[in-house]
Length: 306
Image (tube, rainbow, N blue to C red; front, side, top):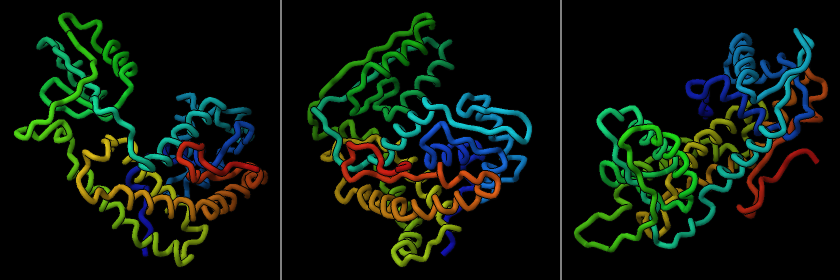
């Protein structure tokens, strides 16, 4: 079976940031550029593009550098490592249990003048990224409890716009047999189709994992591919309360597929990283690690250097 490749999607920056976040847990690790370029070469990235991606991560403050020229080494800042691990915990635990819900929706309503079209677009983008769905033209809803964060974002976007008005409130909708209800604002059919497509796409890889047919040379790319695909769901699934979801909701099967592949391939992917980096960085085996989901979704991911 051909493992799904990631080169057509994620950028070299994204690939490098993912590898550094998923397989390193210490800012004391100091790989040289050549070692990191060798890793990206596994994904079809040229050495020049790899070095350009590394330079961009340095400019963005995600990676720090020491030394100059060929003697330069790179490391991830401690605060960036902490952020990576928090994000990792969020997407590894996503879908493990139903969302707790008190029956109230977080509702955002706003009104903007005709001149506020750029801000209107920015508000819609922000709300969509936070898992809100548009119920009516300027009314958006989410089952989230976090009113404070969205309130601050709206204030930052709209406070300077003359005539702009907005409200953030909690509301409970009456059951109305003539209405599709607030859950109808979400494209649940499309999301269910995406989950089923995920299961189908990685079914062959799951079979190969169960038959122990995936070695280190294939594991690194395969594991990042399935991880990136699952992380998309953690970012886009509104995680509606269970009773609002259609029957036979396919997320559990998709999560089982992800966790089985991600967990099984972890040691092989780590081994492959060490193989790629050691010729340029003899200490690679000391620093390279991997993480997997904890049995208890409330606990941080298992793994890291012992």
